[in-house]
Image: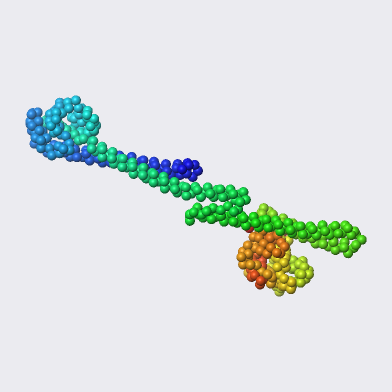
Length: 487
Protein backbone atom coordinates (compact mmCIF):
# COMPACT_ATOMS: atom_id res chain seq x y z
CA UNK A 1 0.00 0.00 0.00
CA UNK A 2 1.37 3.43 -0.93
CA UNK A 3 1.16 5.72 2.08
CA UNK A 4 -0.09 8.97 0.62
CA UNK A 5 -3.35 10.84 0.32
CA UNK A 6 -6.32 9.10 1.95
CA UNK A 7 -4.19 6.04 2.75
CA UNK A 8 -1.69 8.16 4.67
CA UNK A 9 -4.46 9.90 6.60
CA UNK A 10 -6.01 6.54 7.44
CA UNK A 11 -2.69 5.15 8.70
CA UNK A 12 -1.98 8.24 10.80
CA UNK A 13 -5.48 8.88 12.11
CA UNK A 14 -6.97 5.40 12.42
CA UNK A 15 -4.43 2.61 12.31
CA UNK A 16 -1.97 4.39 14.61
CA UNK A 17 -4.74 4.96 17.16
CA UNK A 18 -5.80 1.31 16.96
CA UNK A 19 -2.19 0.11 17.37
CA UNK A 20 -1.66 2.42 20.35
CA UNK A 21 -4.95 1.23 21.89
CA UNK A 22 -4.06 -2.44 21.41
CA UNK A 23 -0.61 -1.90 22.97
CA UNK A 24 -2.17 -0.07 25.91
CA UNK A 25 -4.73 -2.86 26.41
CA UNK A 26 -2.00 -5.53 26.27
CA UNK A 27 0.13 -3.65 28.82
CA UNK A 28 -2.86 -3.18 31.13
CA UNK A 29 -3.96 -6.80 30.84
CA UNK A 30 -0.41 -8.07 31.39
CA UNK A 31 -0.06 -5.88 34.46
CA UNK A 32 -3.44 -7.09 35.73
CA UNK A 33 -2.49 -10.75 35.24
CA UNK A 34 0.86 -10.14 36.96
CA UNK A 35 -0.90 -8.46 39.87
CA UNK A 36 -3.51 -11.22 40.14
CA UNK A 37 -0.89 -13.99 40.20
CA UNK A 38 1.37 -12.23 42.69
CA UNK A 39 -1.57 -11.15 44.85
CA UNK A 40 -2.85 -14.73 44.94
CA UNK A 41 0.56 -16.06 45.98
CA UNK A 42 0.97 -13.35 48.58
CA UNK A 43 -2.50 -14.04 49.97
CA UNK A 44 -1.73 -17.77 50.22
CA UNK A 45 1.53 -17.14 52.06
CA UNK A 46 -0.09 -14.58 54.35
CA UNK A 47 -2.90 -16.97 55.23
CA UNK A 48 -0.33 -19.64 56.09
CA UNK A 49 1.69 -17.24 58.19
CA UNK A 50 -1.42 -16.26 60.12
CA UNK A 51 -1.57 -19.86 61.39
CA UNK A 52 1.39 -19.11 63.62
CA UNK A 53 -0.84 -17.18 65.96
CA UNK A 54 -2.69 -20.43 66.60
CA UNK A 55 0.45 -22.59 66.78
CA UNK A 56 2.14 -20.38 69.36
CA UNK A 57 -0.97 -19.05 71.11
CA UNK A 58 -0.15 -20.76 74.45
CA UNK A 59 3.55 -20.56 74.00
CA UNK A 60 5.18 -19.54 77.34
CA UNK A 61 8.72 -20.77 77.05
CA UNK A 62 11.50 -18.33 76.98
CA UNK A 63 14.38 -20.55 75.87
CA UNK A 64 15.62 -20.94 72.36
CA UNK A 65 15.48 -24.73 72.64
CA UNK A 66 11.82 -24.68 73.51
CA UNK A 67 11.11 -22.39 70.54
CA UNK A 68 13.19 -24.61 68.24
CA UNK A 69 11.37 -27.76 69.35
CA UNK A 70 7.96 -26.21 68.91
CA UNK A 71 8.87 -24.74 65.49
CA UNK A 72 10.33 -28.09 64.34
CA UNK A 73 7.03 -29.82 65.12
CA UNK A 74 5.20 -27.12 63.09
CA UNK A 75 7.56 -27.58 60.13
CA UNK A 76 7.30 -31.37 60.18
CA UNK A 77 3.50 -31.23 60.22
CA UNK A 78 3.26 -28.41 57.62
CA UNK A 79 0.94 -29.67 54.82
CA UNK A 80 2.13 -27.44 51.92
CA UNK A 81 5.79 -28.39 51.79
CA UNK A 82 5.44 -29.07 48.07
CA UNK A 83 4.19 -25.55 47.41
CA UNK A 84 6.50 -23.48 49.56
CA UNK A 85 9.67 -23.72 51.59
CA UNK A 86 9.33 -23.25 55.35
CA UNK A 87 12.32 -22.01 57.33
CA UNK A 88 12.79 -21.42 61.07
CA UNK A 89 15.18 -18.60 61.93
CA UNK A 90 16.66 -17.74 65.30
CA UNK A 91 16.88 -14.23 66.67
CA UNK A 92 20.33 -13.79 65.14
CA UNK A 93 18.99 -14.41 61.66
CA UNK A 94 20.45 -17.91 61.30
CA UNK A 95 18.39 -20.63 59.63
CA UNK A 96 17.78 -23.47 62.10
CA UNK A 97 15.35 -25.71 60.28
CA UNK A 98 14.45 -26.01 56.56
CA UNK A 99 11.44 -27.94 55.23
CA UNK A 100 13.36 -28.97 52.11
CA UNK A 101 15.81 -31.15 54.08
CA UNK A 102 18.80 -29.38 52.55
CA UNK A 103 21.21 -27.22 54.45
CA UNK A 104 20.21 -23.55 54.21
CA UNK A 105 22.41 -21.19 52.21
CA UNK A 106 24.13 -19.13 54.85
CA UNK A 107 25.13 -16.45 52.32
CA UNK A 108 21.55 -15.80 51.28
CA UNK A 109 20.30 -12.43 52.41
CA UNK A 110 16.90 -12.26 54.09
CA UNK A 111 15.78 -8.63 54.01
CA UNK A 112 12.25 -9.61 55.02
CA UNK A 113 13.53 -10.98 58.34
CA UNK A 114 15.24 -7.71 59.19
CA UNK A 115 12.11 -5.76 58.18
CA UNK A 116 9.89 -8.02 60.27
CA UNK A 117 12.13 -7.60 63.34
CA UNK A 118 11.91 -3.83 63.04
CA UNK A 119 8.21 -3.82 62.24
CA UNK A 120 5.64 -3.29 64.97
CA UNK A 121 3.49 -6.01 63.41
CA UNK A 122 6.37 -8.48 63.24
CA UNK A 123 5.51 -9.20 59.62
CA UNK A 124 7.30 -8.41 56.35
CA UNK A 125 7.25 -9.46 52.71
CA UNK A 126 10.04 -9.52 50.13
CA UNK A 127 10.09 -10.31 46.42
CA UNK A 128 13.39 -10.83 44.68
CA UNK A 129 15.95 -13.35 43.51
CA UNK A 130 17.97 -15.85 45.50
CA UNK A 131 21.70 -16.14 45.05
CA UNK A 132 20.94 -19.04 42.70
CA UNK A 133 18.99 -16.66 40.48
CA UNK A 134 15.57 -18.09 41.27
CA UNK A 135 12.78 -15.56 41.61
CA UNK A 136 10.91 -15.95 44.93
CA UNK A 137 8.44 -14.30 47.24
CA UNK A 138 9.20 -14.56 50.98
CA UNK A 139 7.10 -13.72 54.02
CA UNK A 140 8.56 -13.64 57.52
CA UNK A 141 6.63 -13.56 60.77
CA UNK A 142 8.55 -12.96 64.01
CA UNK A 143 7.76 -14.91 67.23
CA UNK A 144 8.05 -12.95 70.46
CA UNK A 145 8.19 -13.96 74.14
CA UNK A 146 5.46 -12.76 76.48
CA UNK A 147 7.90 -10.03 77.48
CA UNK A 148 8.28 -8.90 73.87
CA UNK A 149 11.72 -10.32 73.22
CA UNK A 150 12.43 -11.90 69.83
CA UNK A 151 12.85 -15.64 69.96
CA UNK A 152 13.00 -16.21 66.25
CA UNK A 153 10.89 -16.21 63.12
CA UNK A 154 9.23 -18.47 60.63
CA UNK A 155 9.89 -17.68 56.97
CA UNK A 156 7.75 -18.84 54.07
CA UNK A 157 9.40 -18.86 50.64
CA UNK A 158 7.52 -19.52 47.39
CA UNK A 159 9.18 -19.85 44.01
CA UNK A 160 7.81 -17.45 41.39
CA UNK A 161 9.34 -19.27 38.42
CA UNK A 162 6.18 -21.17 37.55
CA UNK A 163 4.01 -18.08 38.06
CA UNK A 164 6.36 -15.96 35.95
CA UNK A 165 6.28 -18.59 33.21
CA UNK A 166 2.48 -18.63 33.20
CA UNK A 167 2.43 -14.82 33.21
CA UNK A 168 4.85 -14.88 30.27
CA UNK A 169 2.66 -17.35 28.33
CA UNK A 170 -0.46 -15.31 28.96
CA UNK A 171 1.35 -12.09 27.96
CA UNK A 172 2.58 -13.71 24.75
CA UNK A 173 -1.00 -14.81 24.08
CA UNK A 174 -2.20 -11.24 24.58
CA UNK A 175 0.51 -9.97 22.21
CA UNK A 176 -0.42 -12.59 19.60
CA UNK A 177 -4.10 -11.68 19.84
CA UNK A 178 -3.18 -7.99 19.62
CA UNK A 179 -1.07 -8.60 16.52
CA UNK A 180 -3.90 -10.59 14.96
CA UNK A 181 -6.27 -7.70 15.67
CA UNK A 182 -3.81 -5.19 14.17
CA UNK A 183 -3.26 -7.35 11.07
CA UNK A 184 -7.00 -7.86 10.68
CA UNK A 185 -7.63 -4.13 11.00
CA UNK A 186 -4.77 -3.38 8.62
CA UNK A 187 -5.89 -5.77 5.87
CA UNK A 188 -9.59 -5.02 6.24
CA UNK A 189 -8.82 -1.29 6.40
CA UNK A 190 -6.52 -1.59 3.39
CA UNK A 191 -9.31 -3.24 1.43
CA UNK A 192 -11.74 -0.55 2.54
CA UNK A 193 -9.31 2.26 1.70
CA UNK A 194 -8.59 0.73 -1.71
CA UNK A 195 -12.35 0.49 -2.33
CA UNK A 196 -12.41 4.28 -1.88
CA UNK A 197 -9.04 5.31 -3.30
CA UNK A 198 -9.28 3.36 -6.57
CA UNK A 199 -12.75 4.72 -7.55
CA UNK A 200 -11.65 8.22 -6.50
CA UNK A 201 -8.59 7.94 -8.74
CA UNK A 202 -10.77 6.73 -11.60
CA UNK A 203 -13.15 9.62 -10.97
CA UNK A 204 -10.23 12.05 -10.91
CA UNK A 205 -8.94 10.68 -14.21
CA UNK A 206 -12.42 10.78 -15.75
CA UNK A 207 -12.98 14.34 -14.47
CA UNK A 208 -9.67 15.38 -16.06
CA UNK A 209 -10.76 13.90 -19.38
CA UNK A 210 -14.16 15.59 -19.10
CA UNK A 211 -12.43 18.92 -18.32
CA UNK A 212 -10.38 18.44 -21.49
CA UNK A 213 -13.56 17.95 -23.52
CA UNK A 214 -13.75 14.14 -23.64
CA UNK A 215 -17.39 13.74 -22.61
CA UNK A 216 -17.40 10.03 -23.51
CA UNK A 217 -15.28 9.30 -20.41
CA UNK A 218 -17.28 7.18 -17.98
CA UNK A 219 -16.65 5.44 -14.65
CA UNK A 220 -17.59 1.83 -13.92
CA UNK A 221 -19.89 1.67 -10.91
CA UNK A 222 -18.65 -1.02 -8.50
CA UNK A 223 -20.56 -0.28 -5.29
CA UNK A 224 -24.14 0.66 -4.44
CA UNK A 225 -23.14 3.26 -1.86
CA UNK A 226 -22.09 6.90 -1.72
CA UNK A 227 -19.11 6.14 -3.99
CA UNK A 228 -21.49 4.50 -6.47
CA UNK A 229 -23.80 7.52 -6.29
CA UNK A 230 -20.83 9.80 -6.96
CA UNK A 231 -19.89 7.66 -9.98
CA UNK A 232 -23.46 7.98 -11.26
CA UNK A 233 -23.36 11.74 -10.69
CA UNK A 234 -20.12 12.15 -12.65
CA UNK A 235 -21.42 9.93 -15.46
CA UNK A 236 -24.65 11.95 -15.54
CA UNK A 237 -22.63 15.16 -15.50
CA UNK A 238 -20.61 13.93 -18.47
CA UNK A 239 -23.80 13.11 -20.36
CA UNK A 240 -25.33 16.49 -19.50
CA UNK A 241 -22.16 18.29 -20.55
CA UNK A 242 -22.13 16.31 -23.77
CA UNK A 243 -25.76 17.25 -24.39
CA UNK A 244 -25.06 20.88 -23.53
CA UNK A 245 -22.01 20.88 -25.77
CA UNK A 246 -24.10 19.47 -28.60
CA UNK A 247 -26.85 22.03 -27.96
CA UNK A 248 -24.25 24.81 -27.85
CA UNK A 249 -22.78 23.67 -31.15
CA UNK A 250 -26.27 23.45 -32.64
CA UNK A 251 -27.00 26.91 -31.24
CA UNK A 252 -23.86 28.37 -32.81
CA UNK A 253 -24.75 26.71 -36.09
CA UNK A 254 -28.32 28.03 -35.96
CA UNK A 255 -27.26 31.54 -34.99
CA UNK A 256 -24.65 31.52 -37.76
CA UNK A 257 -27.36 30.49 -40.21
CA UNK A 258 -29.79 33.06 -38.80
CA UNK A 259 -27.18 35.79 -39.20
CA UNK A 260 -25.96 34.63 -42.60
CA UNK A 261 -29.45 34.59 -44.16
CA UNK A 262 -30.27 38.32 -43.67
CA UNK A 263 -26.68 39.32 -44.36
CA UNK A 264 -26.79 37.42 -47.64
CA UNK A 265 -30.06 39.14 -48.55
CA UNK A 266 -28.71 42.57 -47.62
CA UNK A 267 -25.50 42.02 -49.59
CA UNK A 268 -27.38 40.62 -52.58
CA UNK A 269 -29.85 43.47 -52.81
CA UNK A 270 -27.15 46.06 -52.17
CA UNK A 271 -25.17 44.68 -55.13
CA UNK A 272 -28.36 44.60 -57.24
CA UNK A 273 -29.16 48.20 -56.38
CA UNK A 274 -25.58 49.21 -57.12
CA UNK A 275 -25.71 47.49 -60.50
CA UNK A 276 -29.18 48.81 -61.42
CA UNK A 277 -28.47 52.31 -60.15
CA UNK A 278 -30.95 54.81 -58.79
CA UNK A 279 -32.75 55.06 -62.17
CA UNK A 280 -34.65 51.81 -61.59
CA UNK A 281 -37.03 53.10 -58.91
CA UNK A 282 -38.92 49.83 -58.51
CA UNK A 283 -35.77 47.79 -57.94
CA UNK A 284 -34.41 50.45 -55.62
CA UNK A 285 -37.56 50.60 -53.49
CA UNK A 286 -37.83 46.81 -53.34
CA UNK A 287 -34.18 46.46 -52.40
CA UNK A 288 -34.39 49.11 -49.70
CA UNK A 289 -37.46 47.38 -48.28
CA UNK A 290 -35.59 44.04 -48.10
CA UNK A 291 -32.52 45.69 -46.58
CA UNK A 292 -34.59 47.49 -43.94
CA UNK A 293 -36.54 44.31 -43.05
CA UNK A 294 -33.46 42.12 -42.90
CA UNK A 295 -31.60 44.77 -40.88
CA UNK A 296 -34.47 44.75 -38.39
CA UNK A 297 -34.26 40.96 -38.29
CA UNK A 298 -30.51 41.17 -37.62
CA UNK A 299 -31.16 43.72 -34.87
CA UNK A 300 -33.67 41.38 -33.26
CA UNK A 301 -31.20 38.45 -33.31
CA UNK A 302 -28.41 40.60 -31.83
CA UNK A 303 -30.74 41.99 -29.14
CA UNK A 304 -31.80 38.44 -28.26
CA UNK A 305 -28.15 37.40 -27.93
CA UNK A 306 -27.38 40.47 -25.81
CA UNK A 307 -30.33 39.71 -23.54
CA UNK A 308 -29.14 36.16 -23.15
CA UNK A 309 -25.65 37.40 -22.28
CA UNK A 310 -27.11 39.76 -19.67
CA UNK A 311 -29.09 36.90 -18.18
CA UNK A 312 -25.99 34.71 -18.01
CA UNK A 313 -24.01 37.50 -16.32
CA UNK A 314 -26.92 38.51 -14.04
CA UNK A 315 -26.88 42.03 -15.49
CA UNK A 316 -30.43 42.32 -16.86
CA UNK A 317 -32.03 45.56 -15.68
CA UNK A 318 -35.77 46.16 -15.44
CA UNK A 319 -37.33 49.63 -15.64
CA UNK A 320 -40.52 48.98 -13.71
CA UNK A 321 -43.57 51.19 -13.72
CA UNK A 322 -47.36 50.77 -13.42
CA UNK A 323 -48.62 49.31 -16.70
CA UNK A 324 -51.90 48.62 -18.44
CA UNK A 325 -50.94 45.11 -19.49
CA UNK A 326 -53.84 44.82 -21.95
CA UNK A 327 -52.66 47.93 -23.84
CA UNK A 328 -49.13 46.49 -24.10
CA UNK A 329 -50.51 43.13 -25.25
CA UNK A 330 -52.71 44.84 -27.87
CA UNK A 331 -49.66 46.75 -29.15
CA UNK A 332 -47.69 43.51 -29.58
CA UNK A 333 -50.59 41.86 -31.41
CA UNK A 334 -50.88 44.85 -33.71
CA UNK A 335 -47.16 44.61 -34.56
CA UNK A 336 -47.57 41.02 -35.80
CA UNK A 337 -51.05 41.30 -37.31
CA UNK A 338 -49.75 42.25 -40.75
CA UNK A 339 -47.38 39.26 -40.76
CA UNK A 340 -50.23 36.94 -39.78
CA UNK A 341 -52.34 38.21 -42.67
CA UNK A 342 -49.48 37.69 -45.16
CA UNK A 343 -49.00 34.12 -43.93
CA UNK A 344 -52.74 33.40 -44.07
CA UNK A 345 -53.10 32.91 -40.29
CA UNK A 346 -55.62 34.41 -37.89
CA UNK A 347 -54.84 36.31 -34.67
CA UNK A 348 -57.94 36.43 -32.47
CA UNK A 349 -57.78 38.56 -29.33
CA UNK A 350 -60.68 38.26 -26.93
CA UNK A 351 -60.42 41.59 -25.15
CA UNK A 352 -61.77 41.58 -21.56
CA UNK A 353 -64.97 43.53 -20.88
CA UNK A 354 -63.73 44.96 -17.59
CA UNK A 355 -60.76 47.18 -17.02
CA UNK A 356 -57.81 45.16 -15.76
CA UNK A 357 -55.85 46.38 -12.70
CA UNK A 358 -52.35 47.68 -13.25
CA UNK A 359 -49.21 45.63 -12.88
CA UNK A 360 -45.66 46.73 -12.11
CA UNK A 361 -43.33 45.89 -14.94
CA UNK A 362 -40.97 46.84 -17.73
CA UNK A 363 -43.14 47.43 -20.79
CA UNK A 364 -40.36 46.81 -23.29
CA UNK A 365 -39.40 43.51 -21.70
CA UNK A 366 -43.00 42.34 -21.41
CA UNK A 367 -43.66 43.32 -25.01
CA UNK A 368 -40.56 41.31 -25.92
CA UNK A 369 -42.14 38.28 -24.19
CA UNK A 370 -45.47 38.76 -26.00
CA UNK A 371 -43.76 39.07 -29.37
CA UNK A 372 -41.60 36.00 -28.72
CA UNK A 373 -44.61 33.85 -27.78
CA UNK A 374 -46.65 35.13 -30.75
CA UNK A 375 -43.69 34.66 -33.09
CA UNK A 376 -43.37 31.01 -32.01
CA UNK A 377 -47.11 30.49 -32.43
CA UNK A 378 -46.99 31.89 -35.97
CA UNK A 379 -43.93 29.76 -36.85
CA UNK A 380 -45.52 26.48 -35.80
CA UNK A 381 -49.09 27.18 -36.93
CA UNK A 382 -49.93 26.14 -40.54
CA UNK A 383 -51.57 28.39 -43.11
CA UNK A 384 -55.23 28.89 -42.19
CA UNK A 385 -54.48 28.21 -38.55
CA UNK A 386 -55.74 30.25 -35.62
CA UNK A 387 -53.89 31.80 -32.68
CA UNK A 388 -56.24 32.81 -29.87
CA UNK A 389 -55.28 35.24 -27.11
CA UNK A 390 -57.30 35.59 -23.90
CA UNK A 391 -56.61 37.71 -20.79
CA UNK A 392 -58.27 37.03 -17.43
CA UNK A 393 -57.93 38.16 -13.84
CA UNK A 394 -57.50 35.30 -11.39
CA UNK A 395 -57.23 36.44 -7.79
CA UNK A 396 -54.18 38.65 -7.37
CA UNK A 397 -52.83 37.83 -10.83
CA UNK A 398 -53.53 38.44 -14.50
CA UNK A 399 -53.17 35.45 -16.82
CA UNK A 400 -52.72 35.74 -20.58
CA UNK A 401 -53.14 32.55 -22.61
CA UNK A 402 -51.86 32.13 -26.20
CA UNK A 403 -53.40 29.06 -27.87
CA UNK A 404 -52.68 27.76 -31.37
CA UNK A 405 -53.68 24.73 -33.40
CA UNK A 406 -50.20 24.14 -34.77
CA UNK A 407 -47.97 21.05 -34.80
CA UNK A 408 -47.59 20.94 -31.02
CA UNK A 409 -44.57 19.81 -29.01
CA UNK A 410 -43.61 16.14 -28.53
CA UNK A 411 -44.01 14.92 -24.93
CA UNK A 412 -40.30 14.12 -24.58
CA UNK A 413 -39.33 17.67 -25.64
CA UNK A 414 -41.91 19.55 -23.59
CA UNK A 415 -39.95 19.59 -20.26
CA UNK A 416 -36.89 21.06 -22.03
CA UNK A 417 -38.29 23.74 -24.34
CA UNK A 418 -37.54 26.52 -21.85
CA UNK A 419 -33.90 25.46 -21.46
CA UNK A 420 -31.21 27.53 -23.14
CA UNK A 421 -30.00 26.27 -26.53
CA UNK A 422 -32.79 23.66 -26.66
CA UNK A 423 -34.80 23.49 -29.86
CA UNK A 424 -37.48 20.84 -30.29
CA UNK A 425 -38.20 21.46 -33.99
CA UNK A 426 -34.96 22.03 -35.86
CA UNK A 427 -36.75 22.49 -39.20
CA UNK A 428 -38.03 25.91 -38.17
CA UNK A 429 -35.65 28.88 -37.95
CA UNK A 430 -34.73 30.27 -34.56
CA UNK A 431 -31.84 30.42 -32.12
CA UNK A 432 -33.36 28.35 -29.32
CA UNK A 433 -32.83 30.98 -26.61
CA UNK A 434 -35.87 33.21 -27.11
CA UNK A 435 -38.16 31.15 -24.88
CA UNK A 436 -35.45 30.82 -22.22
CA UNK A 437 -35.05 34.61 -22.16
CA UNK A 438 -38.84 35.10 -22.03
CA UNK A 439 -39.15 32.67 -19.13
CA UNK A 440 -36.45 34.50 -17.16
CA UNK A 441 -38.10 37.88 -17.82
CA UNK A 442 -41.37 36.53 -16.44
CA UNK A 443 -39.55 35.17 -13.39
CA UNK A 444 -37.97 38.59 -12.78
CA UNK A 445 -41.46 40.12 -12.80
CA UNK A 446 -42.58 37.66 -10.13
CA UNK A 447 -44.68 35.79 -12.67
CA UNK A 448 -44.42 32.58 -14.66
CA UNK A 449 -44.46 31.13 -18.15
CA UNK A 450 -46.17 27.74 -18.46
CA UNK A 451 -46.55 25.59 -21.56
CA UNK A 452 -49.09 22.89 -22.32
CA UNK A 453 -48.96 21.07 -25.62
CA UNK A 454 -50.14 17.97 -27.46
CA UNK A 455 -48.42 16.82 -30.61
CA UNK A 456 -50.46 17.47 -33.78
CA UNK A 457 -53.13 19.22 -31.66
CA UNK A 458 -51.68 22.55 -30.58
CA UNK A 459 -49.93 24.49 -27.85
CA UNK A 460 -51.05 26.86 -25.10
CA UNK A 461 -48.61 29.26 -23.46
CA UNK A 462 -49.89 30.88 -20.26
CA UNK A 463 -48.29 34.00 -18.80
CA UNK A 464 -49.07 34.94 -15.19
CA UNK A 465 -48.27 38.37 -13.73
CA UNK A 466 -49.07 39.71 -10.22
CA UNK A 467 -51.17 42.85 -9.99
CA UNK A 468 -50.27 45.89 -7.89
CA UNK A 469 -51.93 45.70 -4.49
CA UNK A 470 -53.88 48.83 -3.51
CA UNK A 471 -52.23 49.17 -0.09
CA UNK A 472 -48.81 49.29 -1.72
CA UNK A 473 -48.62 52.35 -4.03
CA UNK A 474 -46.38 51.68 -7.02
CA UNK A 475 -43.08 53.45 -7.53
CA UNK A 476 -42.91 55.17 -10.87
CA UNK A 477 -39.87 54.84 -13.12
CA UNK A 478 -38.06 52.72 -10.55
CA UNK A 479 -34.91 51.25 -12.05
CA UNK A 480 -33.78 48.18 -10.17
CA UNK A 481 -31.02 45.68 -10.69
CA UNK A 482 -32.47 42.18 -10.45
CA UNK A 483 -30.54 39.29 -8.91
CA UNK A 484 -31.71 35.90 -10.11
CA UNK A 485 -30.64 32.38 -10.88
CA UNK A 486 -30.11 31.67 -14.56
CA UNK A 487 -31.65 28.45 -15.76
